[in-house]
Length: 305
Length: 268
Image (cartoon, rainbow over all chains, first blue to last red):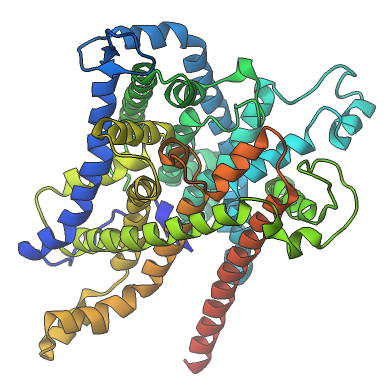
């Protein structure tokens, strides 16, 4: 399948690629790039224009006029401060958990199963299996498995791991659980494609030079698979910050677990407060771009595509 | 050495636990597609039935939503795959100055949370005064599928030896003949994977679609709207059927390519 999609070093060019340029390149590139310009860049500009709009003087609900009104930004940063903190906090935790779960799994599939290619491929299919079942339904499945009166919680209560009045749904724990689960395949794939290419002779060499297993891991395996860790964490962290399904009340969350996405959705689709929804989106986008730039600079993988 | 031994067992056990964790909601969803549940709610097990599988379309609106999702997924996949394949080919085969700008504009959509893209497109269509519907959903889906197509096809173009195309040219094949007789057949597996990925992304997209759907219902929107009252078992049937079909396709191609490789080795 498309496992190669997440290959972190897909950017390595063959040195023999012919140096040609001209009309053909334009014909190949322009349609797609114009499309992205029209439906990716222009919407971002539209978002910024909308965020600066001001309510119509007539006072009609949901009607705005063009202006240079920055008050929506002030409003969302103040009013939605808890949601902003929560979004990035949950995203940080879920990404961390996803690395901890995914790395050993990817190592097992990418290194240990190398001698059996068919078993390796089939196991990898199982790892990405959640991709093939509806995102909303697999979240609802967790909701029902972990609901207040479910056999799972009764079992945990009988083991006294959970108090009789304690529950799971609607807690930050449930939201982070769902976020971690839903985005693990995005973490495993890039890690796998790094680990699959790892030259095992380097690990042997380190062992021959009396490096302990943990030293081999810290000083050889991990640095060599860092590109996979970086693209995996980005592919997990970014969508999580904008997710609002897991945190929504009908799924795993409650009103006090709402994230940025819930606010954007409510303001845009229910309250018709387009400037606030747009300002919140613009703030989210700006924070992510800053974080990604800093992260990529610090970790030193400039070209991710 | 003892420690090394121990770690040999820890890792497989850990991997099995992680796999079980990943598969739990899938198994749950499939099992509850056979639940003899009355009405909309499908939360408590009430006995095995095949009714929901045999009469999935009885639930009002569900098959219309699935049909919409298939239509939108099909059209979006076609457009995104065509546009993306061209970009991927150009990126690998040609040198040009604006390369880093092109890479950046392909990376950005992947580094943007869906809610931002959804709200951005919705605000654009709103400001333009365009009504939401099939058109706006498809325009949105092509956009977010495009970068994934480029990355997938690009990986395949990189494995393609330029010498093969040169040989074609040396034998007086016209550029279009070189493309259709040599380049395209060799790229086809990559293009097919990219198309499957694009279709999967489109079919399962909820967030961006929700912002730009207007009156159109898709399968994820159907589930989201029913989530407040209880998702009917028929939704599990559809999702399970899609899941089983997708897994069979993937496993089939894997076993197939494995057999082919074995045969190649046997010939050698």
